[in-house]
Length: 172
Image 1 (cartoon, rainbow, N blue to C red):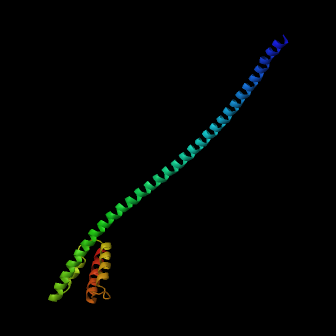
Image 2: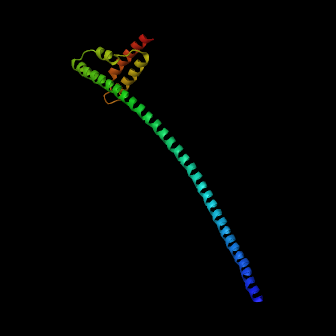
């Protein structure tokens, strides 16, 4: 009976050892699962941090792009306005140019016929309707006919000055 008791005690001894080894195995697996869980949690936090950083960078880039777009639109409007101003100035320049050509043609005729310069005086200040316009036209004429210029004429400057003084008195 002792033999059978010994045989019976062996499975009893093996079972607790087996249970212990199984519990240790289960504990190791639990520990491994906890470590994996910590790693996954750490990875999730890193991904969330990266996501937040990405969103911050994206917002900053969106603001920068919006600012650049706004600046571009402002520059575009300024360019459009300046182009319109240039077109108006070009028209005014063409009118002045044609006027001065007309006056120049009449001066040539006048010099050829040696008539008095009254026609030229009237032509120089034709279309002037205010004192400011008179001053502007006077300055333009002085720039053109000043004796120091290539085509300058002292006699013409005297005529322009007389006509300017006469019209200046009229507008006052």
